Picture 1 (tube, one colour):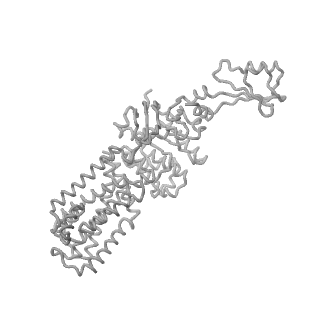
Picture 2 (tube, one colour):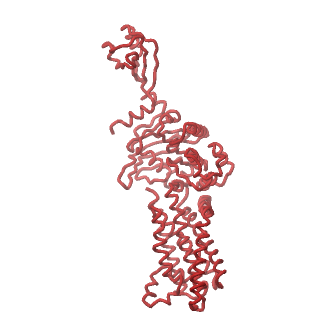
Picture 3 (cartoon, one colour):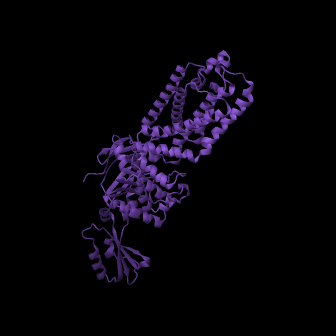
Length: 253
Length: 308
């Protein structure tokens, strides 16, 4: 195992975050604060508690998950796309590194950044609403699983994309709608029965529900199902990444 | 002598159907400077890219110091440093960070003293904290060389290293290349400046349309193909060349005051003595003479212009 290479890639990516602190950290924190002010404070005060949890507190896990998903995808996709765009990918391809090491470096850094951001948002949320975390280890497990899975997903997007527009398409046109419709701001029990069934085809429902359960012990689907689905997404992404490197898809001609 | 790089029946057909390499066989000797010459699109960069692991070969194989580049990629890639043709750099990184990153990527522990030595050798030390985007093109090229040297490679590929670099910097770069060769590093370079290959290389390879059409010791190549010309400055100008001298294939130049005889250095005899004797008999006097040898550039052009 080339640990020096993993460390080099990891630190290089972390340093990139340091250079873009406003975009990477401050911007998502401000967006989340605005959600708390608008939905938690202004509108939320007129909404009844859900399963005994105030609306402001109810949306915290969903908002963290929303940021975690978006940042994991953005960080990882940009991280691998940029060397492709500038041409510096030649160095990565000519280095004595295995695909596993490349993925560990890029996905590890992306997941780390997303997790740090999640904790910052969690701490920020604590300033607006009273927080309780019933199962901290489960919360951590869901956070790490989601950060790694969606960083892998972002990595795949970065490898697939051949332009900046494609980098944006999936986060904006697929992930954001799925996160909004996946129970970030409501319990799916609040939907008509037909839509409850339709919603179960949205994979993000399981992540948000499981994560919320770790806070308030109330969920839309069983926590075991959520965990199984999260693991399934992770496995799917791993298989796709393995296939990409095995075939050299969009990396080697 | 065992080759440091052995290329065997290497072919590459891109997805578009374009065949970039056609069954290339090539052995690079340890410690030599090998110049790979060829027109644009000849296959030079494809060949280098396959050896370095950037492009997959269609058929054939490559070994580096006896190790297969696919099976033992960790060993072979750790031995190789690559300076690419394009100025591809991490624009927002500092010189120090990007060179240190390369060392780590190639599996070497941090060694600030070595990085300092490399940067000083390449006259980059005073720029070490500068962002790469603020550097000139020539400086960026040096950064790429520093990155390639960061992990102390045994083999260095220089793909058009002096493209767009001014004369002074170019000479400084070749000094670095010479000192690297003196330290035992094998160097494979491609260049459009053929006079540089003539000046620097131990051996020359010429590639055209994906085929390696010639690999030769440079001095041997110059001896074999470097025809010479004898130019005689005539005392009195000639209007025509006398019929008696027609067998020599002479040319008149400079308004008839120069008589040019092209001869083969391999020829036995070269014909010079006989020509001078016949000139004396014909009463053609000359006041000066000089010889010039065909340059590598002329040899190169004549090779690649041959019909395939």
